[in-house]
Image (cartoon, rainbow, N blue to C red; front, side, top):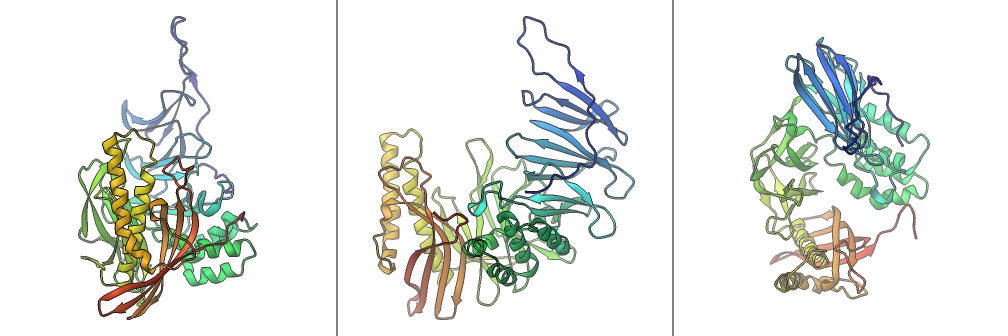
Length: 506
């Protein structure tokens, strides 16, 4: 658990109680109004507890409101000059409510008019801390990255965040954590001073980011049980989940709108030893398509390559934009360069395909061991998705039920030829495969004529008691062996074996 951070400036406790409503009216939610100044501006808080309407903080000057933050609870977390230009900044926070989530922070420079420098979602951490980490210039803002909360078999009480560092670059605050490896290492050692699962995970992840996967695995192998086996179990997943760490703001640094929708992975896509961010982005308010681009460092700047792919954006049941294509995993090849698997739901059925990524081109890998392995993963994923969909709690007509059954049969038919090369002691009933997901893909062999792929997966089957589309599953290792023949790359055999190394073994 992290220690609470001290806000830069606490909100004044002064408040005014609104006049009571007439007796004939239902009782209104009590509202407390307070105000304070920051520079030449007035900050006014209207707090309604956890009632309706939402709490609101406004930033105004001369009777003109320049910015508003609304949430279940709001606060003013700081008023000081962070950038060193003599103009104060104000840090506003919104809290959505709940046991420990979710907090959003907005930073404004109080110029005329005010200019937004940062909006940061920090999930479970209530504020950002101003610190001088590089010994010069503007202060950095330190927050928290909760990507591992509840992950890998942990409860929230056992979870811990990675640090996030926002630097003032080119007139705005952007995530820049990887530029502070010493700070990350000190933070990790402090977090894990009294070892617990979250602290162990933070130290492992920090070593992977700052020193490389081999160093992290060497450190993990020396840890006591059960941490040693747990990290061996989830290590490939952790490293994959870290691929985009410190790159979330690369599209912003390359000129994209800071509120753009985005999803991506990091990797050495153009050459061994390099780092790039492959991401699908869409500006806020845009309709229609999103674009897949490669974002790369150029000196101290980040540049965006040309659009590699244009994909439609749909809306979920809440009306929020939803990407139909995004990079799923990064896969290291024998020469040290990375390829990627794209998750593609444009047809309504999820498919995966393997691609070689260049600065200006995207090439699908077909006669290639990774491409063939991805075809197997895609077909199993498709079967599981359609089998699980029949248990979705939605009303269906007889025709719609028949269509669901037709899609299941088609997916099973497409996947059935793979069973000819499967090795295993028991039957593999494709028509009951209701959960197949994969977290990481590793090519443990990647030779000109022989290859082996090791994939961490979750595998589950439906039964007579299944009543939900969320079919339970267990972690397995899928091992795929491949060989190159006169007809091209072929799967010679594939098998599932249970993975061990949970924090709490049954």
